Length: 204
Image (cartoon, rainbow, N blue to C red; front, side, top):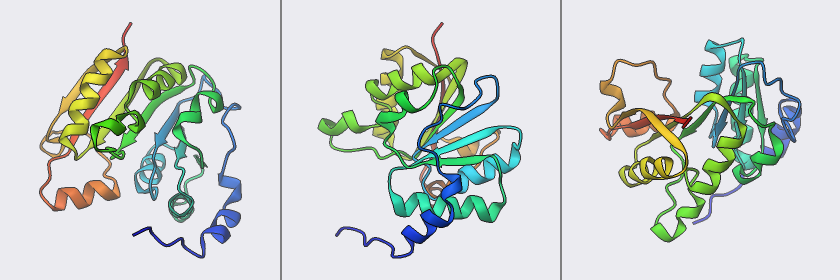
């Protein structure tokens, strides 16, 4: 059954219009810039931005109801260093300056089963080419998922497309590392599902 559209979404988008960007071509590559693709309802983005007020964060999400909720979350959190783009990730290579992003977050992306739909996965080669274009030298890609098959696919795809994995765990919450949890992550963790994470950089 298709989810019913929320009646208050147009009003929310209008109310928080100043938080939305058509493109990010203006951003300063010398600043610290971060991008979350598929930002969902914005809990991760708002908390991370609040902890790092000197960094600039962009949340990308193509579903109006969801990104409207993310804008509300950012406003409630009082963060001033977050903006949103209601765009498809496939467009980002034309909307963001080359070599301007320090970190790209992919949190609990759609696994797009079965395998014949793998081209839609945000870690498929065509998307990785976009990330290589907009990441700074030394920039990183951080990926989290509950899905074993998507994780294995991503590890292989990164290695085949010019990335080097520098951190990998199949049970993130057993590691003594800094971690901001997303809405999905909290739910999956409560269900006892191990969270997988990797960090990758462009090969030199």
